[in-house]
Length: 86
Image (cartoon, rainbow, N blue to C red):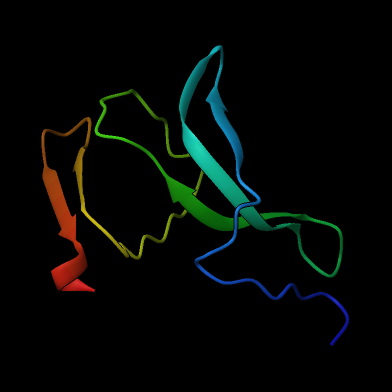
């Protein structure tokens, strides 16, 4: 296995997570490409409480480690996730 990265939750290697010209928290990238150099993004993301628009570019997976996450889809459906649900 040649395409892996070891990290942990105490990492300080975060960078701004930008949506166009607005910062929406910070991200610590685990990887941005797979072993075939195709785009595959996974990382640790954190932010203070905020609201912002986000268009899901594809499948998304969330695992809430701390706090809560509320997502309102265009259909009006609301998804609520929290660390207690993980």
